[in-house]
Amino acid sequence: MKEMILWERPLARNTGFAFDLMKGQSVRVTSQTIIDFVCFNRENLRERFDQARTKANQRKVFLTTGDMLVSKLNNTMMTIVEDTFKEGHHDLQEGMCSRKRHELAAQRGVWEATYGRPLSEMPSHGCTENLSGVLAPYGIALEDVPSPFNIFQDMIIREKTGVLEHSPIRPKPPGAYVILRAEMDLLAALSVCPDVSVGGTTGATIAVLEPER
Ligand SMILES: [Zn+2]
Image (tube, rainbow, N blue to C red; front, side, top):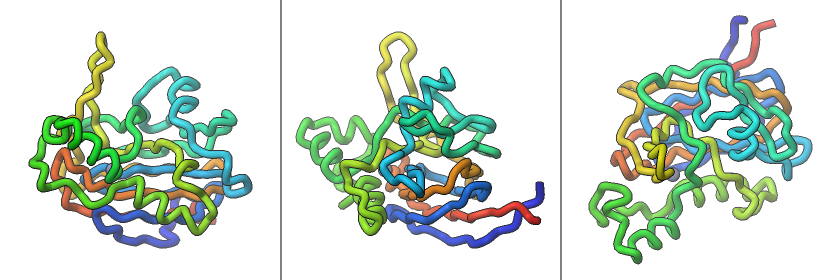
């Protein structure tokens, strides 16, 4: 089906954005670095995307074209209709980066080992602050922001031990995109992650698409 762009906007690195997405509309997310993506049922903002249900219901930990984002109430919220990130996988294990997470890693002396960067590159804030900031006007508290679908976040998962490691694999310039179609009316939000482990310096572009009638 042919689609037209309703609107499109650039997003700077380490910023967030929230927007409405009606059933049948799609969002196209283009980036070279990680995007933390969450969504909520527009009619009941307490119904949120759920990492666990999304994994368990589909019996997999990597999502791509044809896979769904599922809520804790087992409703399909979105379907991935296109995914051009072929170099790696998207993540459903990690939460969101935050200043507190970074400070805790630094206090434990593992920041540089975790992120593979000098401590001087610790960002002042991260996806937690970005998402909670843009969702606050909707009455959504930080505690109620779900762990996201981490688009373009390639993780190494050790099969026998379950150990997680950051991978440097990201979309090659000028970036890859993922198109997600809303299966219900949604409030969606995303954060352009500072993506410290690859020294991310790029922003992202999002576009909302609607089927032509
Ligand atoms: Zn982040």
